Structures are given as C-alpha cells and as structure tokens.
Image 1 (tube, helix red, strand yellow):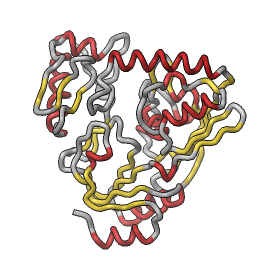
Image 2 (cartoon, one colour):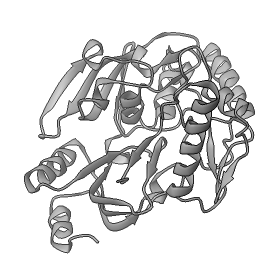
Image 3 (spheres, one colour):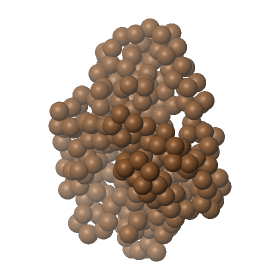
Image 4 (tube, one colour):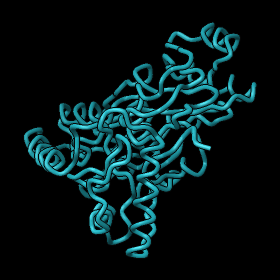
Length: 303
C-alpha cells in the first residue's frame, strides 16, 4: 500500500501524473504485473531529477521503466516509486544528419521522423516496440543492426540526481547490453548519427522487415518480444522448438506456436505462469543440448 504522505509530497512538485496502487499490467506489453505503490510520469527532465533525488534522500526504492516492452513484473507488484519515462520526455530534434530524441520517445516515432527528414539508419528497427531509453539500455536491435550503432552522445541522470554525458565508447554496447545494465543510471536523451537516404528506399527496406516480423512473430497477442538472448551461433527459438516445447502452456501463458522464443499471454496470464515456462524452457534446453539460455527480458518486483 502507498504512503499517503509520500504521495501528497510528490504531487506538490509534479506537473505530470501520479497514482497510487497502479496496476503494472497496464504498463507492460505482456499485460502482466501487480500494483506499484506509487506510479509517477514526470512531465519533464527536471521533474525526473526531483523524483530521483526525493527517492534517494528518503531511502525509497525507485524503479524506472519505459514502455514496459521487455519487462516481467511480479504478481505482487513493485514497492516504492515507479517512474515511467514517457510522453513528458518524448521530444525529437533533427539537426543536419543528427537525430536527437528524449528517452520517452517511441523508437518507431524516431525512425519515422528520421525517414521524413530523408535520413537512414533506423531501418533495422521496423516493428521494434519500446522507447528510446529502453532501447539504448538494452541495445535493442534486429536485422543486423542496433541502436548502439547509431548512438553517439547520451545524456544520463545518475541515481544521485546528477546529469552527465556518455560517449558511444563509454556505453560499452554489446549484444542486448550496455554499461547502464551494470552501472545503473537513467537515459534522458540520445543523439544518433544518421545519413542521407531517399525516403522511398527507407520505406521499401522497412516494409520488408515488417512483413517478415508479422509472418514470424505473434504480434497479435500480448508478449515481451524475445524471452531469451540467442546463444553464440545459435537460435534460442530453434533450441526451444527442438526441445519439444513449442505450444506448451501453463495457465494462460504459452510458448508461441509461431515462434518458440516468445511467450504469449492468452488472456489472464500471471507472472508466476510466465516464470514457470521460462524455467521449463531453460531447464529442458540445458538438459537436451547443454546450452544455458540467458533471459533477454528483465524481471522486477521479484524476490
């Protein structure tokens, strides 16, 4: 349960929205998750800074999310303050060949803005959900590229409440990873280096990627994208399918019959259901093939 005094104090300096006992299933692409004690959507980066400092000074747990597109939240929810970096920090700027976007901007919107300006580079991202902040933290990618290839200058907010810039080198981008995963901070804005390209060529390439995504992934059902990272030289989905798990169901969570590296919510799946399937897939693949699958999705609120 939320602390009413804490809630009132937060409201006193926020132009954005704040709610108590907010169901997190409303804010994850899996449509799974219990309540957040206090859920806040800052209206700008200064409010974000105030919230971070407020939580730190009072020793209150702080969880930061974007679109929740690769997140599994516990059925018991999240204690403390959950900050959603969304519409209040979603501006996009274009200066020459550089596209800058705040962390709450959707990756698809940024790709569209780049295309409209005749700038290539974001074609690989066609159909990838989520915000710029989450995409940078995860180094989201597909089709042979990732956001880390384009990212040049990243404004971050430390958990102590200080703004600073990181370079591409500082970010140590890797396969679905960045330094932010081991040295937690909040992405605020990112500058991407793009290049001139005809809009028709961009459209054609992105349409091809979208068509393949629609044909091979269960986009019709709530899911969190790829559940596991692909092992070196291998496909997590192929291993799960070869282990005979495609279509396996626990409660309302099911390993997709279209792509075995996706777990879909058939209606009222719980985090417990999804976790059981994740554990079953990891254990069975390891038993059959000696390969230990590493989760790509992130877990929060779990003991």
